[in-house]
Length: 218
Image 1: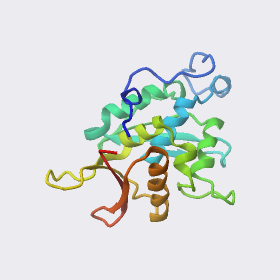
Image 2 (image 1 turned 90 degrees about the horizontal axis):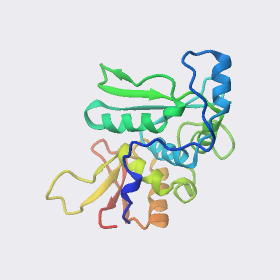
Image 3 (image 1 turned 135 degrees about the vertical axis):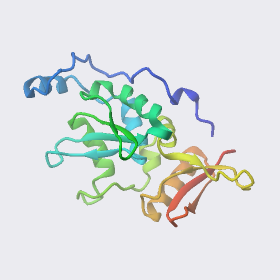
Image 4 (image 1 turned 120 degrees about the vertical axis):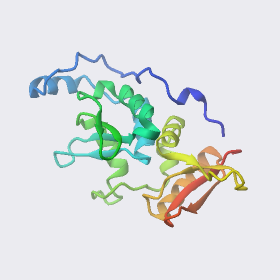
């Protein structure tokens, strides 16, 4: 499958479905409350969020799960421009500037907390019995939630060559899924095969943790 270049880096923020008022310049509760009412998570930003949460992004709650915020961190060396791009895409949802973690050589930012992000928490952080859990993959995840936009951002966020050895016989792409148990990596591989026709296989990395790979010819 060939992913159209329209899904990759572009500087125009994903549009909202509602008119957004001017962002509050200070953390005044009343102004922030009114501002949040104007925000609605667009389908494009939802799809981007799905892809980045399969990678290095995380969800955080400060009120027992009533609202959530997205947190992004990426390497200065490898993904600085990508992180800046994400900051632009979520600009309506961000009140604070990007920050740099000198000791970790990483850039990051976080969104405001909002009830629209609970949709993402229900997908990633709530198990089939309705109980909170760590980030995980449900059955048929790809078929139900991973759009072409989400796949493109997942690749940009946490993808790479299957092997950087030029003599390696299988030329492919790797998605760093080792943060998930093997059975959940299998769900992702099966979903990529089913929905996108990608020829996938699971290969342990040097630490014997499972990553999802697929042929570049798919």
